[in-house]
Image (cartoon, rainbow, N blue to C red; front, side, top):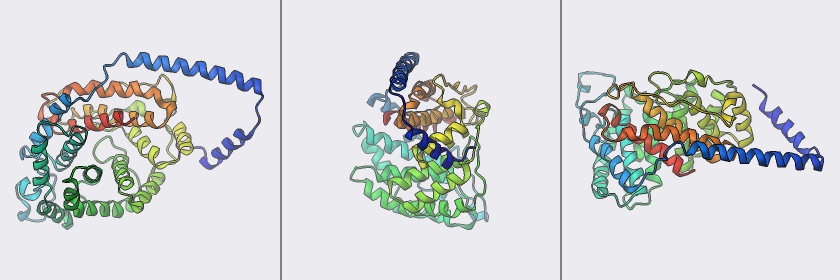
Length: 385
């Protein structure tokens, strides 16, 4: 990979050179024609896909699954390490706040989904019922018991880092919620939030190599959510740690093999999640130079990705590919929103979001207990572009 500092110096030198006025005029004209062509091409692509519009009616449908699964205790995947026979307890006894939705992290982000939808649609028909659920689950007593679970020696790696990331995303959503009950929920959740921040601060300095999988352990995904939380809450220490470790892990990466994706069980794109993290922690010029080495093809105006195809919606692993479509869309929308020269990614993102959105209605529990969250997350990135 090129030395970024040297490359930046070269850019500065080139920028200082005087150009002939006629050449400049000709180049401007050519660029204008090129830009017009790109706009027309993007518009053409956009007409091929029906954009997702999250209306109140749609939100009423989406809210059903997280509401239904928050208190559905079984089936349940605990993923716990037993220290003794005393640890053999029901999910609701071990995790009184986050026992539903099949596993701990899915329960956490189901709570996030409800708050996200409430913030956008405060007039949801079940708004008061949702608020009561949130108060019941995120009580001071329940969170104290969740914290006690994490404080046990055998649980210090529990939900690392995927569940940690979603807990901080939930804390961020509550922190930025202007509802009167939000402050109470934030205070209740604070001890567990503080524990998760501490877990990141203890773990990241010890991680010598990033984890580049397309599933839960993906380091870039977990760091991105933690970085968002740090920015929202002005936690400079956590923000600096993540930025430093992101550069340690990824700054010298070249030629990410996007053609190898997706893996059969992926719900995250290793290449795109890394791009998303580096987009946040690097300055614009540095990021664009890095991206040119890391994934040069994404700058091509004809860049495209085939959507992930699910063959069996009742297979909990195979249905991951719908989640991949949503997480890809979120990254592409975010990149297109931040930089004008990546606007060609919008129709690619739209295609991914739309392709799996229709699957959310009356979905099997294998996908339904979590995919709504990823759809909302992708839509929010599109909405905020």
